[in-house]
Image (cartoon, rainbow, N blue to C red; front, side, top):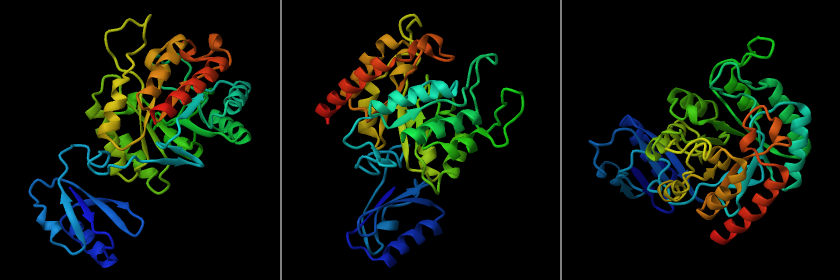
Length: 354
């Protein structure tokens, strides 16, 4: 249920509405207007509550019952696009935001090389995995806190913002077999400008709640990836978990879904159509990951441009200075030259669409 306050509603009238919500046993989320509270979203089971319970209060303009299971991330709650600020970068606004970097951080030399050409291309956000959730226990698990420190140092030099994945609440085992002092999520929160939640963790609801609570005060942006076999409703409800627990700065990231294709052609099926659906259903920014969606760097450009044409707010692209020798996902990592071409074309297409 959503309460729209009248323009010029007095602070005491707003407080009376909030007091009634609390006394009835519900929680709320607020959207502030230029002069005060604009909209109040009520959270909880309101099936037995009439709209008049709130509409009779002074200062209330109207009360609307939301039919969607995902309330706070829906267009019904707020029709305006949610714009997320990362330093001076606005995600969800007029500009197409590109985030690029290696699947996994490997060495300081690799990080410096990639950060150098990413920055030179005018890309302002660098991706890089310090913690890697791998199917095999014998695969490279990431550099851990060492990688995060190197990434922070290098990105500071090139004035790049950082997006990196938090894989869980466990403590990472370093290359000498010792657990790190803090858990993975705590380390990522400390170093990242944007926290990535991978497809494997989209349905880890306890993890999503903990992430939201730990970032509730800072409102540090979170990029949530769609699970490979999850419906769009599942995806939106996962985002709702984060927003309902205090952090509204969520981006929805599409990274391909499991279908019927053979890996030799496509790693996953690129869900381009989902971009337009999510833009209509939700007020959150929509990011597209062409690298995981297609799994082959020769096709990354095509799906990147299709995503830009479909209205994506940003692209999350894997790039490597030496894809043939990458320790993770080299087959889907584009070169510096390929990244430059994708950026130039995608920005032009996005400008036409917007």
